[in-house]
Image (tube, rainbow, N blue to C red; front, side, top):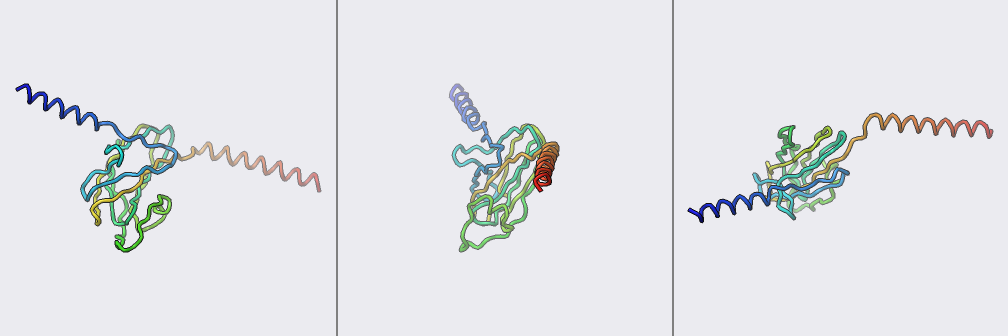
Length: 174
């Protein structure tokens, strides 16, 4: 009976090692994730973790985009928000060049993408490859803070003040 308990304890310990998650920066930089085939979980290539976490102190936008060859689609679960699909992709022919630049991918309508507005809080993102014509691939996710309306108001007020001062100086010099 003792070997069975030891095996169970070892299994639980192995599961606990994979229980941590990938910390996602909230500065708008892109974090790569991989997946093995349709129906497989999205994971970090270096740690094999399937959860991506972050804490934000203000409103932000989570963005996820397919990469490489288009045609992949993801089912994304964001803690406390539920599950949603990224946009329907246009399958790319394998003879076309793959795309690896996240900014280019975000603006290319062939690639599946999704964005979600988030309030302040701590979030965990997980996902599954809902479609994958090439049986595996990768994508990117990003969290970007959205400036608060008060910040925009202060910026506009400051620009107006600078403009008024500049205009006053040109009137005096004339």
